[in-house]
Amino acid sequence: MSEFGLNVNGTAARTPLMCNPQSEIENPKSPVPVIGLLGGVGAGKSTVAQMFAEEGCRVVDADAIAHAVLQQAEVKERVREAFGDGVFSPEGEVDRDRLGQAVFADAGRRQALERIVHPRILARMREEVEAAGAVGPSAVVIDAPLILEKGLAPWCDYMVYIRASANVRRRRLRQARGWSRSEVQQREASQISLKTKRGRADYIIDNAASPEHTREQVRQILARLVARQRR
Image (cartoon, rainbow, N blue to C red; front, side, top):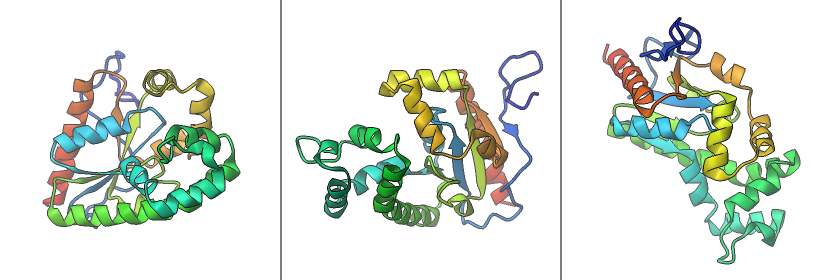
């Protein structure tokens, strides 16, 4: 098997690749395994998170939490003060596409937005991780784009890297969100490198083939982690 989840003949491997573990431990610190998803923009982290959910896991979705945070009156007021009326819809809600265009090309503006929303997002995420662990699902999965950047790695017992080529990721983002190549590059430039993310992974999921292939890898990882938890 090659390092990218392919067999030596170039066909897609039937199992996820286990890396040199960076976070996998004999006695996980959480009541149930907490899995952090890593990967490039457009790699399919949310798709994989949904597959984990369908296998009985609780997903903590940073994007959904961010959406809720941006609806808070205090947050909207601060966003308006920082970025003006142009990032709001006619209904008075934050237009996330306009806000993204306004901040991702400018590191200073991006950091200003992060100061407004990230403390609230992280606090809500922490609450959800702890609450989910108390209920006892198969695992808790953190679906967030900035796990390493925002210091969320200590929350996780395991890291899973979602792999897809740059061409595949750009095509997905162009079709799903209408993003140009430069928009993708701007967002990736604001994150830790893919090489670093991959180096932190316990497992790699190849998400460039069929959904069935990806789902099989999800099931195998989950079975392994649940088995380790029961030792």
